Image 1 (cartoon, rainbow, N blue to C red):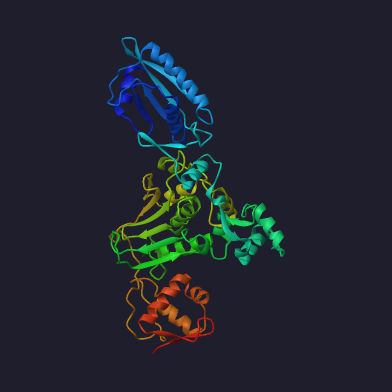
Image 2: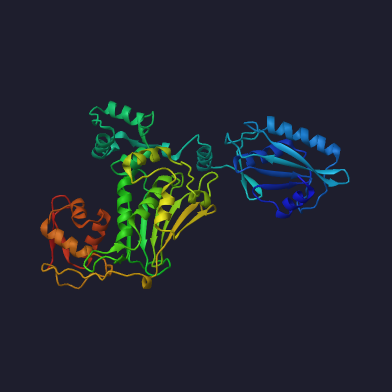
Length: 476
């Protein structure tokens, strides 16, 4: 390194990849610094540079002593040993600066002599103090993945019908009748642990009620009026829970029903097309569900505004991935079990690393934000202004049986009327359960429950009898 290059490095100041030391005398302290760099993204320690950026440099005697100390620290005081590199840069008057380069580790996590794991935190370092951070280090080194985490759910929590259909359609296999055979099959398919419990992947994809086991791994969606988040003012809201396939279908349905419909050069009487192709959100939702960080106990959030749609996933981009790299088609498999099952048709899937590119090809107005500090990844899909759209003029069809009561506050203008659809479904089947009503009105069960409550609050319906054996009655 030339003196000019050294001065350029010093001018940049200390950060998470660069540190200054005027001298080094404690091998254990240096080993901790090396471990912190190796557990993070690697970096350089400039020895002979003061904290204020001045250049006292090192004498030949100091250089000899410090080089021996570096060798001992890297080989004996860090586990696993590190292969570091040193380079001497002359600063004049027989004084030099040792540029110590610590590479990003390939055998993480690295410990110091006392078994402490260190991470870089800005220009300083800190201890790893939580299981979550330790798991993330193992995840980054591909020694551990979050979807392998054991849960407390036994195989009795399996949705037998869902799993049976998957075995039949994908593997051409029959569902095992014996519990021992089912457990062995689940273990062989990387869906259950050796101790006989479903792992996280097994719960997310095939449990009967995943939200009872992992309530944090859901999607929370809100449609706001305008372009800002409101505390209490919203047009539509819903929480999506259940197996991944159901969450995906319901979240996609939420987005599509809140998009504007455009003529798109079709005939006047032809149904409108969504302002943004559904396939764009298919790709983005699959990406959010499959590649999110399941070590972060938080839901995926879906916000719809007048000018944009945001999908916010817990966890920033892993390892050395950047926004530029994912735009170019690069990927890093954070949850390999989930990816393998999605590739078998569990969700719409067209190949690892290609989803973002396909979404951009169909709708270039997508921005990606990797928030390292907030530990989240945000996708922002920009909507066109209403003035630029050839909107379809939607006319509600006449319904002779529809009640004449005033519309319930909260319905979306210009959207299908879920309230009247629900009333018609109740007329046809007063004793119907939530599942039937959801299918009949083509919405989720959560939406059915919310709309039933609206109807009860406005004294449009009442429940007669118990929840199991009773029926709904429409109040004229």
